[in-house]
Length: 122
Image (cartoon, rainbow, N blue to C red; front, top):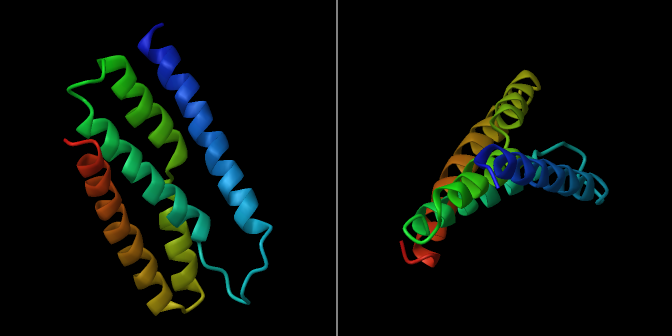
């Protein structure tokens, strides 16, 4: 199987998973003010997947590493939604929430990537 096909298939799976997480969280009772939970969840999960694939890179063929890191994690994560959610929070005057959104995504993402590497023994 070619690398582009694997990346495309895994990318599709990641995008569908992101849609499912967003749809599921949107259906839950929510507090009065919006918080970008779905974006946080998928970005942290994607960071873990990339960390895992990096940790396993010595055991994975290059095409499977690309499928996981570029395809699955790339389709799952969303930098653009994170940044636009932050801009929206700022435009609503919710500066603390915007700063928290940046900090939590960054720190949790780094932690998840490190955890993925650690779990894989990498």
